[in-house]
Length: 60
Image (cartoon, rainbow, N blue to C red; front, side, top):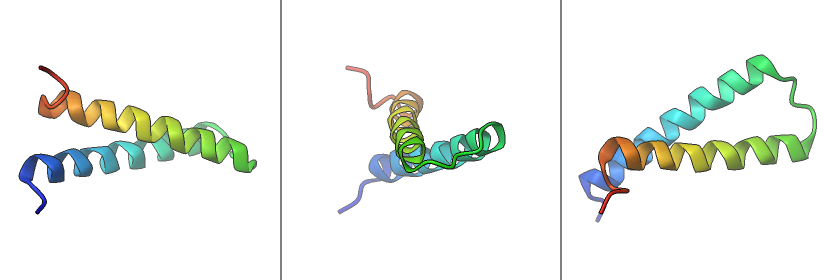
């Protein structure tokens, strides 16, 4: 079962990735598949860190 913390973390990650993608798209003209893959990986990584830090799940 999905807990509230897991749902909130996933929601924050998705929100971060959406905003990140819009900003990157506005700055760069992503034409290559490798560029899209790299930006997606960076977005997911940073989004996950952002969600963990804002919910306190990354702290021990």
